[in-house]
Image 1 (tube, one colour):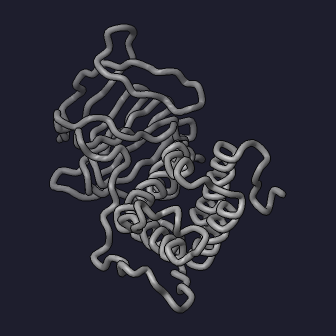
Image 2 (cartoon, helix red, strand yellow; image 1 turned 90 degrees about the vertical axis):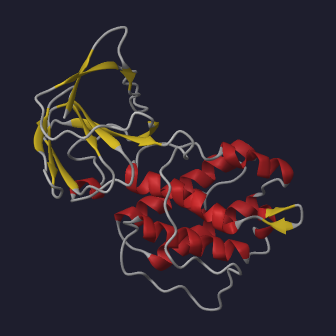
Amino acid sequence: MTRTRRTGDGAAGRYPHDAVGMGTPEITTRKATPMTDHELPSHLIEGRRTPLFGLDTMPEPLAATHRTTVWATLHVDAGSVRYIDVEGASPREVRLDPGDSLVIPPNLSHEVEPSTDARFFVQFYREPHAPLVPQVEAPAQDPPPSFRRDAPWEHRGRDLDSPEEIFEMVTRQYADVAQDDLLAPYFTVDGELIDWQALILRITDYWNHVILYAPDYEIDAIEQHRHVHEGDAFTAEAFDRWLQVFIDTVEGGWTGPNTTRAKKRGTGMAWAMAQRFLGHGKWRPPQHQ
């Protein structure tokens, strides 16, 4: 285990706090009592990190046995967190206090049990040239290139609770977008359709992050659409149609708290994008008209 204590100037590392104005503390690292430590590979760089979670605010996946797909570190800001490896040759069980941190290897099942006053976050790491948001690998059966369907989607009978379910949700949505006369032209470059497979994986990355990794963490995906708007201006009708397709996709396939969160975030993102590109008050979601 690596324990970290806050210091003043000259600290070895920086871990930005979330958007609630907590500042940017500096930390330095010292070794605690040796106990089957895992060393973070030195070539990795910081990727995304979660906001500060507490017992009542941490996402459901963190409240159960779970694993990360990338290297990560758990950092305790207040209270205490009990960390338990549930597999491995030498599983760890340790209490982390304020200022402590712990290295978590990828694909190692573990549990965290925060105290009632705990505040903690998870820092993810990535390869120097890897995407900032951890990638989600496509399931073995990729969607057909034609993206054609002639029957309603089947309900999955579960929540959007895994990368595989989110991949399925995004695939269904853009299968319908690709067949929509109003929306499909926005995905055409030089007269040819874009690489749908690559697009679906990028959008899956986004939803995987905001639903599973950090539900309250804001990612500005809006500005990435500016070049599309400048080439073929968005319209109020396009926002109506996109949101309708999105809501129909989500409600038609999933049920649960993550599903509700996805609909809320999708609606909010469409509204914010319309305000930025069309102007304030030019478009509103139907439920806010």
